[in-house]
Length: 299
Image 1 (spheres, helix red, strand yellow):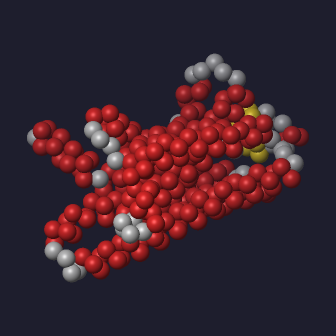
Image 2: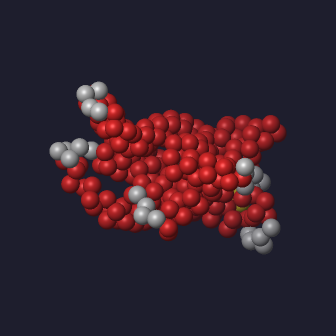
Image 3: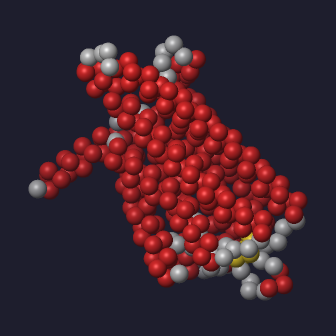
């Protein structure tokens, strides 16, 4: 367990540093330049991932909260609630990123073309709805989480070092799982549909480029690169999200959490927030050029 916890700390440290760098970059772009619609979504996704690292499990928030003179029960409720909200926002925002990129690259003759010029307007509404939905949706679990009391009669399920889930009625447990699964299946379905659409668009574009001048290919390359990045993130997200969902839902249904399984779940949960900023940094020419300029100035 010691080696596994070390891996979690390294993963969390790398993820926080990469996301913090990306967040500062996006804030600079949004305040100082004309941001693209994708920049606004990516900035929010980066913030969500930073919050996930500080609330998921007890990797980073344990030492912070131990210094605060607050009751453990309140700590558990607030961290668990924020974690569930951020987890829901992560899938919603990734879905939003996929949908908006599909609209952005859609041909002018398609049905989606009429939404291109109103993306920022729709984005503001989308942000409001997904935040409102997730803040409300995750509020029911506050009543079923609290400080671990070390009393076996209560049949608590320990989920972190200090926090546990309290027993809940089978109907309530099944209802929460059903609603959560329905939301996730719908959003993953939307992501897979838009991803398939983008793959088709890229395939058609590549076939058309064979008959065009190389300059046209160069002009299309940033858009193509952005689409490929989002496709990669969506595929990775879907795999990691469902691995996490299978582990967590099985544990809740069986009402049993093994410490090793809990550690593996934390690793899987943090894999997407860790990989995402690294992929975005390596595929964004603006960041690459910025790092090259900084490197040349240092030398």
